[in-house]
Length: 197
Image: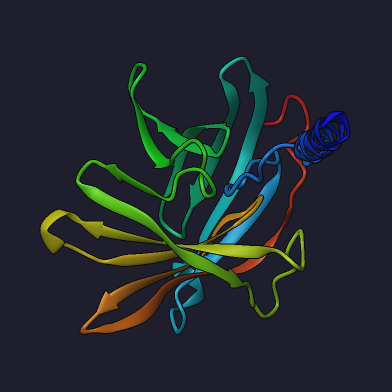
């Protein structure tokens, strides 16, 4: 009996050691300062591209705070996000947040609802983006489907990749999935020199 208990304890200890050594769960969002992502709609003109750049990234007691800029040919906006344990939340006025991805995503939480939109994990997929060098060439993406309450509105599928976030988005149009946004370039830009604005 002692041998059985000793063997069980050894297996549990080995299993716990493997769990501890796995490290933190992957982040399905862009978070590295200077990372720049360029998105385009297939067939659209180059002037309609969107550039997303991580302006700053800092770790604090409530997780990582990431500031991103969104630049198009005609517009420039900025947004602040909080990342923690799989969570990606857009910071709104005051202490309010809009949950983009819930804490525990994608392994512990695969369904969530936010402001009348039901989101759920459809499955995993290999990522094939011609011309785009991924941080991890063997990265597996996660497809998330978003369905408005009562099916009133656009039904959407988004492919998310660790350390990048969105790489492709499809909308259901006339019964067919149509690509409306795709990552066409990713890299890093240097932050501006001190004193330059």
